[in-house]
Image 1 (cartoon, rainbow, N blue to C red):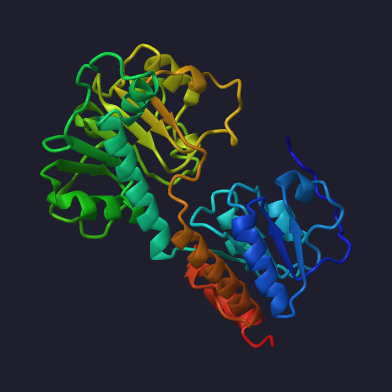
Image 2 (cartoon, rainbow, N blue to C red):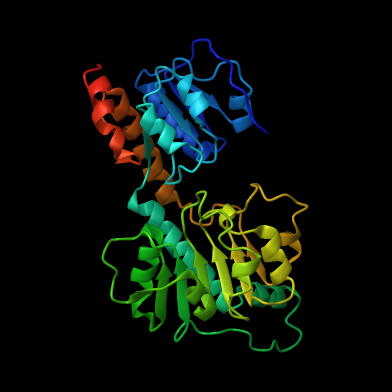
Length: 342
């Protein structure tokens, strides 16, 4: 549904928070208020988008990463200095438009964030290989019969990483001693690759990996990169894990191939629509681990995200860029406009 923004907004607080998760947004809200800063928080995207009080006086928009922040909204927010994501993801924000309008886009990237996701992804790899769900179900059913062996070792397997950002690199670092082959598809990466990870094409990765971890960023080019055609390339009996963004996989296509038993296990933490609707056929798939987009959200991660979110907002209000900037090309113009602002 397209939202039409009115041409003028009534006055609003300096910082607008949009997000339902109290564990993250409430501490940020309380801390900013403790600094004497005006804050308005909307607990849902709909509440924000349908409010008559949105962004006229907002200096910073601090939204859940999936909130659509289009050019239209930014153009009608004359005092907006920055859009700060409380997480790593900024896919909801039109970064090109923000740069053209002189608005910073920042995010939070503490090591605990991607390290927790790396650990959680490895956990899903091992839970899939060792059939933890099947063992648990057998135990709860009374352990009345001897269960056939269904586990497999990670040793000797080929792990394919789609995307080779911080989470993938952290996974590779941790699994380097595990006597496995690792390969990754990341065509835009120009940084040196570790010698224990082989760069390959997407087709090669899908056809030769025993375990496929989806860890790419979501954008117009990567949306549904795993679709009916590409999913059909995967090895029968392979494991598919997605802990990045749901939109990277065409869920209907995944359901159609997974229901045939093509994958030995599918593990998903993210979905095209969140929360995952009860009507989704993914719920009916056997041999599937489904977690609610939080498998890697540890106490350690949340504590650091809270602190970094507050620090990013304070820096912007002081006329300084946030710790991590997504659109650095805007910095000269942005600094010229805001650096001398008290």
